[in-house]
Image (tube, rainbow, N blue to C red; front, side, top):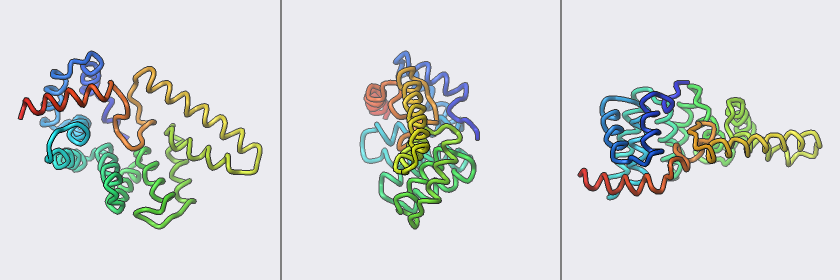
Length: 215
């Protein structure tokens, strides 16, 4: 799978975010998005979806996600799946998760597994859900590992409970690695593509001010 966020361009964005140079960050992101950088297009759409003021923000977010998706971005398809899941448009969420999962995007395997697990957008099937969680867990997905651990804890077998304990240790380590060390890692993607990174509250507050001024 193409690691769209781990490109040199996004590393520049990350550096600016860590230094809280938000105006410079947004200017560069806008330029790169319009130049066709898929990962930055998703980031640009995410800013509109989560922090843009006014009624047009959702439209703009979807526009950028769809542009990136048409250009082959699996992260954009995952973002679209998350967007429609939040809107309770489960059939659309299923469609985008499935497309990305079939192309090897393991956070989308997890998202698709959740739909099968809960029976929304598709007929409920615990076996298919666990197969998808295992696929994602093999790539290190934290929440997929947690789903498998919960399943094993419910088992009466002592050995399964021991395995579950080790899985949960791995989950805790991954959370520490990402949140404490402030690293971007797709193994922690669940219902957001930028969960908690770079002081998200400050980032989105600065974005709202910048986009109003730029309008």
